[in-house]
Amino acid sequence: MSRVRVPGPLAGRDFRLLYTSTVVSGLGDWLDQVALLVLVTTVWHGGAGDLALVVAASMLPLLATPFLAVLVDRRPSRPVLILTDLVQAGLTLGLVFAPGVYWAAGLVLVRSALGSVGGLAGQIQLRVSVPPDGIQAATVLLQTAMQSVKILGPALGGLLVAFMSPRAVFAANACTFLVGVIAARALRSTSSPSRNADLHYFKELGEGFRHVFGSRLLRSLLFVMCSLMFVVFLYDSMAALIVPALGMGTSYIGYMVSAVGLGGVVGSLLMGRFAGRLRPFLTMAGSVLAIGCIIVAIGFAIFREIRIDSSIWLCVIFLLGIASAGILVTFPSVVHSETPVELTGRVWALMNSVPAVLNVLAPALAAALVMWIGLGSLLLLAGIALLLTAVVVAVRLGGIPPTVPPPAAPPSGADDGAGPAEEPTPGPAPLNSGATHRETRAPHVKRAGSSTEEITMADKIDKLAEAGFALTDANDAQQAVLKSLTEDEIDVLLSVKSRVEAAGSDVEGHSVSDPSGGYLW
Image (cartoon, rainbow, N blue to C red; front, side, top):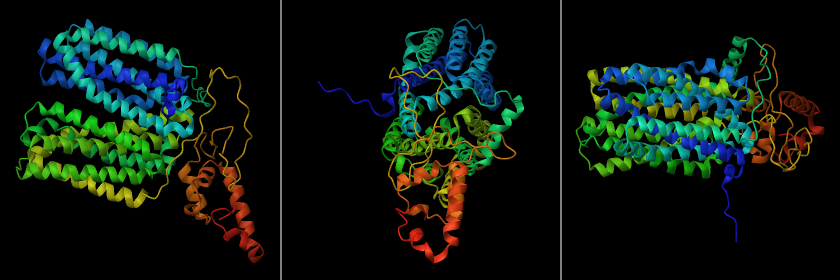
Protein backbone atom coordinates (compact mmCIF):
# COMPACT_ATOMS: atom_id res chain seq x y z
CA MET A 1 0.00 0.00 0.00
CA SER A 2 1.45 3.39 -0.98
CA ARG A 3 1.85 5.97 1.75
CA VAL A 4 0.04 9.30 1.58
CA ARG A 5 2.46 12.11 0.75
CA VAL A 6 2.47 14.85 3.41
CA PRO A 7 2.83 18.28 1.77
CA GLY A 8 5.91 20.38 2.53
CA PRO A 9 6.42 21.56 6.08
CA LEU A 10 3.62 19.34 7.42
CA ALA A 11 6.05 16.46 7.08
CA GLY A 12 7.84 17.87 10.13
CA ARG A 13 6.43 16.77 13.49
CA ASP A 14 6.93 20.07 15.31
CA PHE A 15 5.32 22.12 12.56
CA ARG A 16 2.32 19.75 12.49
CA LEU A 17 1.85 20.38 16.21
CA LEU A 18 2.20 24.14 15.77
CA TYR A 19 -0.15 24.09 12.78
CA THR A 20 -2.80 22.10 14.67
CA SER A 21 -2.61 24.39 17.67
CA THR A 22 -2.90 27.52 15.49
CA VAL A 23 -5.92 26.24 13.56
CA VAL A 24 -7.79 25.06 16.66
CA SER A 25 -7.03 28.34 18.44
CA GLY A 26 -8.20 30.37 15.42
CA LEU A 27 -11.48 28.48 15.34
CA GLY A 28 -11.94 29.07 19.06
CA ASP A 29 -11.34 32.81 18.61
CA TRP A 30 -14.20 33.04 16.11
CA LEU A 31 -16.53 31.10 18.43
CA ASP A 32 -15.52 33.40 21.27
CA GLN A 33 -16.07 36.57 19.23
CA VAL A 34 -19.62 35.62 18.27
CA ALA A 35 -20.48 34.54 21.83
CA LEU A 36 -19.06 37.75 23.34
CA LEU A 37 -21.11 39.99 21.03
CA VAL A 38 -24.28 38.01 21.84
CA LEU A 39 -23.53 38.12 25.58
CA VAL A 40 -23.03 41.90 25.60
CA THR A 41 -25.99 42.83 23.40
CA THR A 42 -28.58 40.12 24.17
CA VAL A 43 -27.90 38.90 27.70
CA TRP A 44 -26.61 42.13 29.27
CA HIS A 45 -28.58 44.40 26.87
CA GLY A 46 -25.52 46.58 26.31
CA GLY A 47 -25.41 49.40 23.79
CA ALA A 48 -22.82 50.81 21.40
CA GLY A 49 -20.68 52.08 24.29
CA ASP A 50 -20.45 48.60 25.82
CA LEU A 51 -19.54 47.06 22.47
CA ALA A 52 -16.87 49.72 21.92
CA LEU A 53 -15.44 48.99 25.38
CA VAL A 54 -15.07 45.28 24.66
CA VAL A 55 -13.56 45.89 21.21
CA ALA A 56 -11.11 48.43 22.64
CA ALA A 57 -10.09 45.96 25.37
CA SER A 58 -9.18 43.41 22.69
CA MET A 59 -7.25 45.93 20.55
CA LEU A 60 -5.31 47.99 23.10
CA PRO A 61 -2.74 45.27 23.97
CA LEU A 62 -1.54 45.39 20.35
CA LEU A 63 -0.01 48.78 21.10
CA ALA A 64 2.03 47.30 23.96
CA THR A 65 3.26 44.28 21.99
CA PRO A 66 6.70 45.74 21.07
CA PHE A 67 7.42 46.31 24.77
CA LEU A 68 6.35 42.77 25.69
CA ALA A 69 8.39 41.30 22.85
CA VAL A 70 11.68 41.92 24.70
CA LEU A 71 10.53 39.55 27.43
CA VAL A 72 9.46 36.95 24.84
CA ASP A 73 12.86 37.00 23.12
CA ARG A 74 14.53 36.43 26.50
CA ARG A 75 12.76 33.09 27.02
CA PRO A 76 12.62 29.80 25.09
CA SER A 77 9.49 29.72 22.93
CA ARG A 78 8.01 26.39 24.11
CA PRO A 79 7.46 27.29 27.80
CA VAL A 80 6.07 30.70 26.75
CA LEU A 81 3.50 28.97 24.54
CA ILE A 82 2.53 26.59 27.34
CA LEU A 83 2.17 29.33 29.96
CA THR A 84 0.21 31.78 27.80
CA ASP A 85 -2.24 29.15 26.58
CA LEU A 86 -2.77 27.83 30.10
CA VAL A 87 -3.51 31.27 31.57
CA GLN A 88 -5.73 32.18 28.61
CA ALA A 89 -7.76 29.03 29.22
CA GLY A 90 -8.33 30.16 32.82
CA LEU A 91 -9.30 33.72 31.76
CA THR A 92 -11.72 32.35 29.15
CA LEU A 93 -13.35 30.21 31.83
CA GLY A 94 -13.63 33.42 33.85
CA LEU A 95 -15.90 34.82 31.12
CA VAL A 96 -18.34 32.02 31.92
CA PHE A 97 -18.88 33.58 35.36
CA ALA A 98 -18.40 37.28 34.47
CA PRO A 99 -21.23 39.30 36.08
CA GLY A 100 -21.15 42.24 33.67
CA VAL A 101 -19.51 44.04 30.79
CA TYR A 102 -16.76 45.67 32.87
CA TRP A 103 -15.59 42.33 34.24
CA ALA A 104 -15.70 40.88 30.73
CA ALA A 105 -13.70 43.81 29.31
CA GLY A 106 -11.02 43.37 31.99
CA LEU A 107 -10.70 39.64 31.29
CA VAL A 108 -10.57 40.28 27.54
CA LEU A 109 -7.86 42.94 28.02
CA VAL A 110 -5.54 40.61 29.95
CA ARG A 111 -6.29 37.66 27.68
CA SER A 112 -5.58 39.72 24.57
CA ALA A 113 -2.21 40.81 26.00
CA LEU A 114 -1.30 37.17 26.67
CA GLY A 115 -2.54 36.24 23.21
CA SER A 116 -0.15 38.78 21.70
CA VAL A 117 2.73 37.28 23.71
CA GLY A 118 1.75 33.77 22.62
CA GLY A 119 1.52 34.92 19.00
CA LEU A 120 5.09 36.24 19.13
CA ALA A 121 6.31 32.97 20.67
CA GLY A 122 4.49 31.10 17.90
CA GLN A 123 6.37 33.07 15.22
CA ILE A 124 9.68 32.28 16.94
CA GLN A 125 8.72 28.60 17.23
CA LEU A 126 7.93 28.58 13.52
CA ARG A 127 11.52 29.59 12.78
CA VAL A 128 12.99 26.65 14.73
CA SER A 129 10.37 24.12 13.56
CA VAL A 130 10.83 24.69 9.82
CA PRO A 131 14.08 24.90 7.79
CA PRO A 132 14.80 28.31 6.20
CA ASP A 133 13.77 27.21 2.71
CA GLY A 134 10.41 25.98 4.07
CA ILE A 135 9.30 29.20 5.80
CA GLN A 136 7.34 30.49 2.82
CA ALA A 137 5.56 27.17 2.30
CA ALA A 138 4.72 27.06 6.01
CA THR A 139 3.33 30.59 5.82
CA VAL A 140 1.13 29.61 2.88
CA LEU A 141 -0.24 26.61 4.80
CA LEU A 142 -1.02 28.73 7.86
CA GLN A 143 -2.71 31.47 5.82
CA THR A 144 -4.78 28.90 3.95
CA ALA A 145 -5.89 27.35 7.22
CA MET A 146 -6.75 30.68 8.84
CA GLN A 147 -8.78 31.79 5.81
CA SER A 148 -10.64 28.46 5.96
CA VAL A 149 -11.35 29.04 9.64
CA LYS A 150 -12.67 32.49 8.69
CA ILE A 151 -15.35 30.74 6.63
CA LEU A 152 -16.23 28.03 9.14
CA GLY A 153 -15.78 29.94 12.42
CA PRO A 154 -18.59 32.55 12.24
CA ALA A 155 -21.10 29.99 10.96
CA LEU A 156 -20.20 27.46 13.65
CA GLY A 157 -20.21 30.18 16.30
CA GLY A 158 -23.69 31.30 15.31
CA LEU A 159 -24.89 27.68 15.32
CA LEU A 160 -23.49 26.99 18.80
CA VAL A 161 -24.96 30.19 20.22
CA ALA A 162 -28.35 29.22 18.79
CA PHE A 163 -28.30 25.84 20.58
CA MET A 164 -26.15 26.72 23.60
CA SER A 165 -25.76 29.73 25.85
CA PRO A 166 -22.87 32.14 25.13
CA ARG A 167 -21.27 31.10 28.42
CA ALA A 168 -21.16 27.47 27.24
CA VAL A 169 -19.33 28.62 24.09
CA PHE A 170 -16.70 30.28 26.30
CA ALA A 171 -16.17 26.94 28.02
CA ALA A 172 -15.69 25.30 24.61
CA ASN A 173 -13.15 27.96 23.66
CA ALA A 174 -11.22 27.30 26.89
CA CYS A 175 -10.75 23.73 25.66
CA THR A 176 -9.09 25.01 22.46
CA PHE A 177 -6.42 26.69 24.61
CA LEU A 178 -5.86 23.40 26.40
CA VAL A 179 -5.26 21.78 23.01
CA GLY A 180 -2.55 24.40 22.52
CA VAL A 181 -0.99 23.47 25.86
CA ILE A 182 -0.90 19.77 24.91
CA ALA A 183 0.61 20.55 21.49
CA ALA A 184 3.26 22.88 22.96
CA ARG A 185 4.29 20.30 25.57
CA ALA A 186 4.82 17.75 22.78
CA LEU A 187 7.21 20.01 20.83
CA ARG A 188 10.74 18.62 20.62
CA SER A 189 12.43 21.89 19.70
CA THR A 190 12.41 25.33 21.23
CA SER A 191 14.23 28.57 20.56
CA SER A 192 17.30 29.68 22.46
CA PRO A 193 17.03 32.87 24.56
CA SER A 194 18.35 36.11 23.05
CA ARG A 195 22.13 36.23 22.94
CA ASN A 196 22.02 39.62 24.63
CA ALA A 197 19.49 38.78 27.35
CA ASP A 198 21.84 40.28 29.93
CA LEU A 199 21.49 43.75 28.42
CA HIS A 200 19.33 46.46 29.92
CA TYR A 201 15.67 46.18 28.92
CA PHE A 202 15.65 49.41 26.91
CA LYS A 203 18.84 48.43 25.07
CA GLU A 204 17.19 45.19 24.00
CA LEU A 205 14.08 47.10 23.01
CA GLY A 206 16.20 49.45 20.91
CA GLU A 207 17.78 46.52 19.08
CA GLY A 208 14.44 45.66 17.51
CA PHE A 209 13.85 49.25 16.39
CA ARG A 210 17.40 49.58 15.03
CA HIS A 211 17.06 46.34 13.10
CA VAL A 212 13.77 47.36 11.46
CA PHE A 213 14.81 50.89 10.57
CA GLY A 214 18.34 49.77 9.62
CA SER A 215 17.01 47.39 6.97
CA ARG A 216 15.88 48.93 3.69
CA LEU A 217 13.56 46.01 3.06
CA LEU A 218 11.85 46.14 6.47
CA ARG A 219 11.59 49.95 6.41
CA SER A 220 9.94 49.77 3.02
CA LEU A 221 7.62 46.97 4.07
CA LEU A 222 6.57 48.83 7.22
CA PHE A 223 5.79 51.97 5.24
CA VAL A 224 3.81 50.00 2.66
CA MET A 225 1.81 48.11 5.28
CA CYS A 226 1.03 51.28 7.26
CA SER A 227 -0.25 53.03 4.13
CA LEU A 228 -2.12 49.98 2.93
CA MET A 229 -3.80 49.01 6.21
CA PHE A 230 -4.87 52.58 6.95
CA VAL A 231 -6.63 52.84 3.58
CA VAL A 232 -8.14 49.35 3.88
CA PHE A 233 -9.60 50.12 7.31
CA LEU A 234 -11.16 53.32 5.95
CA TYR A 235 -13.60 51.27 3.92
CA ASP A 236 -13.51 47.98 5.84
CA SER A 237 -14.87 49.69 8.97
CA MET A 238 -17.87 50.83 6.89
CA ALA A 239 -18.78 47.31 5.71
CA ALA A 240 -22.12 47.41 7.53
CA LEU A 241 -23.06 50.46 5.42
CA ILE A 242 -21.59 49.23 2.13
CA VAL A 243 -23.75 46.09 1.92
CA PRO A 244 -27.17 47.85 2.06
CA ALA A 245 -25.82 50.66 -0.15
CA LEU A 246 -25.25 48.03 -2.86
CA GLY A 247 -28.91 46.98 -2.56
CA MET A 248 -28.34 43.80 -0.52
CA GLY A 249 -29.94 42.71 2.75
CA THR A 250 -28.01 42.81 6.02
CA SER A 251 -27.71 39.00 5.97
CA TYR A 252 -25.22 39.41 3.14
CA ILE A 253 -22.66 40.81 5.58
CA GLY A 254 -22.00 37.25 6.73
CA TYR A 255 -21.96 36.00 3.15
CA MET A 256 -19.39 38.68 2.28
CA VAL A 257 -17.12 37.53 5.12
CA SER A 258 -17.35 33.94 3.88
CA ALA A 259 -16.68 35.01 0.26
CA VAL A 260 -13.53 36.88 1.31
CA GLY A 261 -12.39 33.87 3.33
CA LEU A 262 -13.01 31.46 0.44
CA GLY A 263 -11.12 33.77 -1.89
CA GLY A 264 -8.29 33.91 0.63
CA VAL A 265 -8.05 30.11 0.61
CA VAL A 266 -7.84 29.99 -3.19
CA GLY A 267 -5.35 32.87 -3.26
CA SER A 268 -3.13 31.25 -0.64
CA LEU A 269 -3.08 27.99 -2.62
CA LEU A 270 -2.07 29.92 -5.75
CA MET A 271 0.65 31.71 -3.80
CA GLY A 272 1.92 28.33 -2.62
CA ARG A 273 2.51 27.30 -6.23
CA PHE A 274 4.23 30.46 -7.45
CA ALA A 275 5.42 32.48 -4.42
CA GLY A 276 8.98 31.15 -4.47
CA ARG A 277 9.51 32.55 -7.97
CA LEU A 278 7.79 35.93 -7.46
CA ARG A 279 9.39 39.19 -6.45
CA PRO A 280 7.82 40.08 -3.08
CA PHE A 281 7.08 43.77 -3.58
CA LEU A 282 5.98 43.26 -7.17
CA THR A 283 3.54 40.64 -5.86
CA MET A 284 2.25 43.08 -3.25
CA ALA A 285 1.89 45.80 -5.88
CA GLY A 286 -0.16 43.47 -8.07
CA SER A 287 -2.41 42.55 -5.14
CA VAL A 288 -2.93 46.19 -4.14
CA LEU A 289 -3.65 47.11 -7.77
CA ALA A 290 -6.36 44.43 -8.01
CA ILE A 291 -7.89 45.45 -4.66
CA GLY A 292 -7.85 49.12 -5.68
CA CYS A 293 -9.71 48.37 -8.92
CA ILE A 294 -12.38 46.41 -7.03
CA ILE A 295 -12.87 49.15 -4.43
CA VAL A 296 -13.14 51.80 -7.18
CA ALA A 297 -15.81 49.66 -8.90
CA ILE A 298 -17.79 49.30 -5.66
CA GLY A 299 -17.49 53.02 -4.90
CA PHE A 300 -18.63 53.94 -8.42
CA ALA A 301 -21.65 51.64 -8.13
CA ILE A 302 -22.66 53.25 -4.82
CA PHE A 303 -21.97 56.78 -6.08
CA ARG A 304 -24.10 56.29 -9.22
CA GLU A 305 -26.65 54.06 -7.41
CA ILE A 306 -26.10 51.21 -9.85
CA ARG A 307 -27.91 48.01 -8.86
CA ILE A 308 -26.33 44.65 -9.74
CA ASP A 309 -27.40 41.14 -8.77
CA SER A 310 -26.13 40.14 -5.33
CA SER A 311 -24.47 36.99 -6.67
CA ILE A 312 -22.24 39.14 -8.89
CA TRP A 313 -21.11 41.19 -5.89
CA LEU A 314 -20.29 37.98 -4.01
CA CYS A 315 -18.08 36.94 -6.92
CA VAL A 316 -16.38 40.35 -6.83
CA ILE A 317 -15.72 40.01 -3.09
CA PHE A 318 -14.40 36.49 -3.74
CA LEU A 319 -11.85 38.04 -6.14
CA LEU A 320 -10.99 40.55 -3.40
CA GLY A 321 -10.11 37.64 -1.12
CA ILE A 322 -7.89 36.08 -3.80
CA ALA A 323 -6.02 39.38 -4.27
CA SER A 324 -5.48 39.80 -0.54
CA ALA A 325 -3.46 36.58 -0.38
CA GLY A 326 -0.58 38.28 -2.17
CA ILE A 327 -0.22 40.58 0.84
CA LEU A 328 -1.02 38.08 3.60
CA VAL A 329 1.62 35.62 2.40
CA THR A 330 4.29 38.09 1.27
CA PHE A 331 4.35 40.14 4.49
CA PRO A 332 5.40 37.37 6.93
CA SER A 333 7.77 35.86 4.35
CA VAL A 334 9.71 39.13 4.00
CA VAL A 335 9.76 39.76 7.77
CA HIS A 336 11.22 36.31 8.45
CA SER A 337 13.70 36.60 5.58
CA GLU A 338 15.19 39.77 7.06
CA THR A 339 15.20 38.82 10.74
CA PRO A 340 17.51 36.56 12.76
CA VAL A 341 15.74 34.19 15.14
CA GLU A 342 16.88 36.00 18.29
CA LEU A 343 15.15 39.22 17.15
CA THR A 344 11.98 37.63 15.77
CA GLY A 345 9.73 38.62 18.69
CA ARG A 346 10.75 42.27 18.74
CA VAL A 347 10.73 42.73 14.97
CA TRP A 348 7.43 40.90 14.46
CA ALA A 349 5.77 42.93 17.21
CA LEU A 350 6.95 46.25 15.77
CA MET A 351 5.95 45.36 12.22
CA ASN A 352 2.42 44.51 13.38
CA SER A 353 1.79 47.10 16.08
CA VAL A 354 2.59 50.25 14.07
CA PRO A 355 -0.10 49.53 11.44
CA ALA A 356 -2.44 48.61 14.32
CA VAL A 357 -2.19 52.17 15.67
CA LEU A 358 -3.43 53.48 12.33
CA ASN A 359 -6.19 50.87 12.31
CA VAL A 360 -7.55 52.44 15.50
CA LEU A 361 -7.61 55.91 13.91
CA ALA A 362 -9.02 54.92 10.51
CA PRO A 363 -12.65 54.13 11.54
CA ALA A 364 -13.12 57.56 13.16
CA LEU A 365 -11.78 59.30 10.04
CA ALA A 366 -13.94 57.10 7.82
CA ALA A 367 -17.08 58.05 9.75
CA ALA A 368 -16.24 61.76 9.37
CA LEU A 369 -15.56 61.37 5.64
CA VAL A 370 -18.84 59.52 5.05
CA MET A 371 -20.72 62.42 6.66
CA TRP A 372 -18.73 64.95 4.61
CA ILE A 373 -18.40 63.42 1.11
CA GLY A 374 -20.61 60.33 1.23
CA LEU A 375 -19.94 56.58 1.24
CA GLY A 376 -19.43 56.20 -2.52
CA SER A 377 -16.90 59.04 -2.62
CA LEU A 378 -15.04 57.53 0.35
CA LEU A 379 -14.65 54.23 -1.52
CA LEU A 380 -13.56 56.00 -4.70
CA LEU A 381 -10.97 57.97 -2.70
CA ALA A 382 -9.72 54.79 -0.97
CA GLY A 383 -9.54 52.90 -4.26
CA ILE A 384 -7.54 55.65 -5.96
CA ALA A 385 -5.16 55.76 -2.97
CA LEU A 386 -4.61 51.99 -3.32
CA LEU A 387 -3.91 52.33 -7.06
CA LEU A 388 -1.32 55.06 -6.40
CA THR A 389 0.25 52.92 -3.65
CA ALA A 390 0.52 49.99 -6.07
CA VAL A 391 2.29 52.13 -8.67
CA VAL A 392 4.77 53.55 -6.14
CA VAL A 393 5.57 50.10 -4.72
CA ALA A 394 6.05 48.59 -8.19
CA VAL A 395 8.34 51.41 -9.38
CA ARG A 396 10.42 51.86 -6.23
CA LEU A 397 10.60 48.30 -4.86
CA GLY A 398 9.42 45.94 -7.58
CA GLY A 399 12.95 44.92 -8.59
CA ILE A 400 13.84 43.34 -5.23
CA PRO A 401 14.31 39.58 -5.84
CA PRO A 402 12.62 36.72 -3.93
CA THR A 403 13.65 36.47 -0.28
CA VAL A 404 15.24 33.57 1.58
CA PRO A 405 15.08 33.46 5.42
CA PRO A 406 18.41 33.31 7.27
CA PRO A 407 19.15 29.92 8.86
CA ALA A 408 17.72 29.46 12.34
CA ALA A 409 20.06 29.04 15.27
CA PRO A 410 20.29 25.39 16.38
CA PRO A 411 17.17 24.77 18.51
CA SER A 412 17.66 23.67 22.07
CA GLY A 413 16.13 20.39 23.05
CA ALA A 414 15.67 19.26 19.45
CA ASP A 415 15.58 15.51 19.10
CA ASP A 416 14.18 13.75 16.08
CA GLY A 417 15.34 10.38 17.24
CA ALA A 418 17.91 10.08 14.46
CA GLY A 419 20.98 10.80 16.57
CA PRO A 420 23.31 13.77 16.24
CA ALA A 421 23.58 15.27 12.79
CA GLU A 422 26.89 15.43 10.99
CA GLU A 423 28.58 18.81 11.47
CA PRO A 424 28.50 20.66 8.13
CA THR A 425 31.62 22.19 6.70
CA PRO A 426 31.58 25.96 7.28
CA GLY A 427 31.82 28.40 4.45
CA PRO A 428 29.98 28.85 1.16
CA ALA A 429 29.88 26.39 -1.70
CA PRO A 430 31.72 27.47 -4.88
CA LEU A 431 29.61 29.80 -6.99
CA ASN A 432 29.59 27.53 -10.02
CA SER A 433 29.35 24.19 -8.24
CA GLY A 434 25.57 24.00 -8.07
CA ALA A 435 25.82 22.70 -4.49
CA THR A 436 23.43 23.84 -1.82
CA HIS A 437 25.01 26.30 0.57
CA ARG A 438 25.16 25.23 4.21
CA GLU A 439 26.37 27.39 7.04
CA THR A 440 26.94 26.53 10.68
CA ARG A 441 25.70 29.85 12.00
CA ALA A 442 23.06 32.39 11.11
CA PRO A 443 24.43 35.15 8.86
CA HIS A 444 24.36 37.65 11.69
CA VAL A 445 27.29 39.99 12.19
CA LYS A 446 27.94 42.99 14.36
CA ARG A 447 28.56 46.53 13.23
CA ALA A 448 30.02 49.41 15.12
CA GLY A 449 27.40 51.20 17.14
CA SER A 450 24.95 48.32 17.16
CA SER A 451 25.21 45.07 19.05
CA THR A 452 22.88 42.98 16.93
CA GLU A 453 22.09 44.74 13.65
CA GLU A 454 21.98 42.17 10.87
CA ILE A 455 23.58 42.58 7.47
CA THR A 456 20.35 42.09 5.58
CA MET A 457 19.82 40.51 2.22
CA ALA A 458 18.95 43.88 0.65
CA ASP A 459 22.18 45.40 2.00
CA LYS A 460 24.20 42.56 0.46
CA ILE A 461 22.53 42.92 -2.92
CA ASP A 462 23.03 46.70 -2.93
CA LYS A 463 26.69 46.35 -1.97
CA LEU A 464 27.40 43.75 -4.66
CA ALA A 465 25.46 45.66 -7.32
CA GLU A 466 27.35 48.90 -6.56
CA ALA A 467 30.63 47.00 -7.07
CA GLY A 468 29.54 45.94 -10.55
CA PHE A 469 28.24 42.41 -9.95
CA ALA A 470 25.55 41.66 -12.54
CA LEU A 471 23.30 39.65 -10.24
CA THR A 472 20.55 39.42 -12.83
CA ASP A 473 22.83 37.20 -14.92
CA ALA A 474 23.37 34.73 -12.09
CA ASN A 475 21.22 31.63 -11.80
CA ASP A 476 19.05 30.95 -8.74
CA ALA A 477 21.63 28.76 -6.99
CA GLN A 478 24.35 31.39 -7.41
CA GLN A 479 22.07 34.17 -6.15
CA ALA A 480 21.19 32.08 -3.10
CA VAL A 481 24.90 31.66 -2.29
CA LEU A 482 25.59 35.40 -2.62
CA LYS A 483 22.62 36.27 -0.38
CA SER A 484 23.92 33.94 2.34
CA LEU A 485 27.41 35.50 2.52
CA THR A 486 28.44 37.31 5.69
CA GLU A 487 29.75 40.88 5.56
CA ASP A 488 33.35 39.68 5.98
CA GLU A 489 32.94 37.26 3.07
CA ILE A 490 31.48 40.01 0.89
CA ASP A 491 34.39 42.31 1.74
CA VAL A 492 36.86 39.57 0.72
CA LEU A 493 34.94 38.99 -2.53
CA LEU A 494 34.98 42.71 -3.36
CA SER A 495 38.67 42.94 -2.53
CA VAL A 496 39.50 40.05 -4.88
CA LYS A 497 37.38 41.61 -7.62
CA SER A 498 39.14 44.97 -7.32
CA ARG A 499 42.55 43.29 -7.48
CA VAL A 500 41.52 41.27 -10.55
CA GLU A 501 40.26 44.41 -12.28
CA ALA A 502 43.44 46.29 -11.34
CA ALA A 503 45.45 43.65 -13.20
CA GLY A 504 43.85 44.90 -16.42
CA SER A 505 43.90 42.92 -19.64
CA ASP A 506 45.99 40.06 -18.23
CA VAL A 507 42.98 38.57 -16.45
CA GLU A 508 40.12 40.52 -17.98
CA GLY A 509 38.85 37.54 -19.94
CA HIS A 510 38.21 35.49 -16.79
CA SER A 511 36.07 38.21 -15.27
CA VAL A 512 33.74 38.94 -18.16
CA SER A 513 33.78 36.04 -20.63
CA ASP A 514 31.18 33.90 -18.84
CA PRO A 515 28.94 35.93 -16.47
CA SER A 516 26.72 32.98 -15.60
CA GLY A 517 29.45 30.54 -14.62
CA GLY A 518 32.53 32.59 -13.80
CA TYR A 519 33.64 33.23 -10.26
CA LEU A 520 33.46 37.03 -10.70
CA TRP A 521 30.93 39.00 -12.75
